[in-house]
Image 1: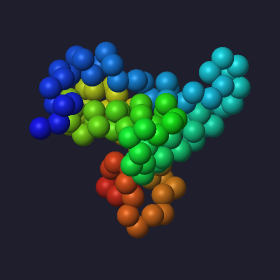
Image 2: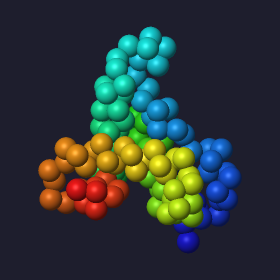
Image 3: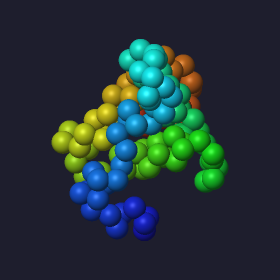
Image 4: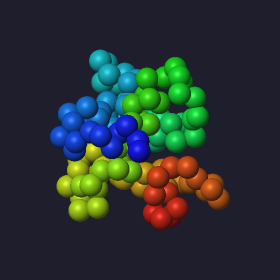
Length: 113
């Protein structure tokens, strides 16, 4: 049994970061476009899904791994009421539009394509 399964949905809503928080570049300067921000988040998602290093230095890697793990166990995902899951699925859609990998580790990529 995973330690994450001991948490309630409310705890996850309080602790899981919004996906926009996973784009740590240019937070204070407002530089960059929404498209660039989404592309950075997609790159962070792809990295986190491929990364097997538990001590990976980028903070975004650990945060994105938590979001992905949350999405797999969230009971609200299927009925579309979890905002974190909705954001991750949307990010996976952005990724899937351009993904050409035969085997992809990004959640839902194969199903979206």
